[in-house]
Length: 195
Image 1 (cartoon, one colour):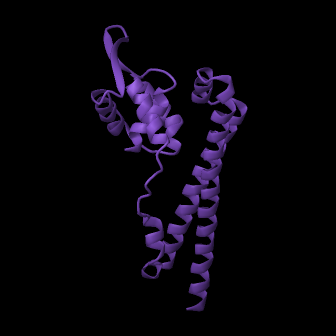
Image 2 (image 1 turned 120 degrees about the vertical axis):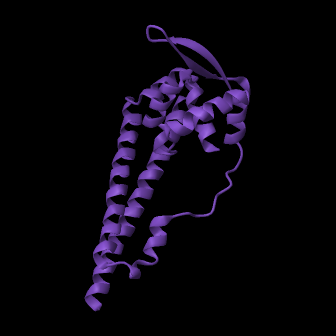
């Protein structure tokens, strides 16, 4: 259900086509909520049916048309309600840590590969999130510029700082996961030396 609210957040800036939303999604919201096009387009149609969005056919190319969506008053109210409602946390589904709990079943080389893959993944994500922080701080993030253009002056600092805060949390999480996997590599080595 969070996909719906991620789309409402993007559309609160300006009307967009599904194509535009997909591109903007990939360069902003996708850092915290992954969704492929195969989920975005059907969700847009559901949101329009539910009255959260209004779609309008616009010219696209020499003879084509596309649907451009804009958030409705009902969509803004739904987004605000969601933002003001505490999250219900779901129970863990963490295949990496599940696998780590049973590494004794793995060949040591495979166990090391699991830990190294975890380090590599979180190192890449950390770099992406740190890059996003820099874009936010130096004003080069396109969606932030558009959002700030329609945000009252009194709210601009909050808008910026909450986004930086979010990515700093993701960087901290990545740092923790990288350190955990490094400890895993050391553990694998020490257990192999002891056997």
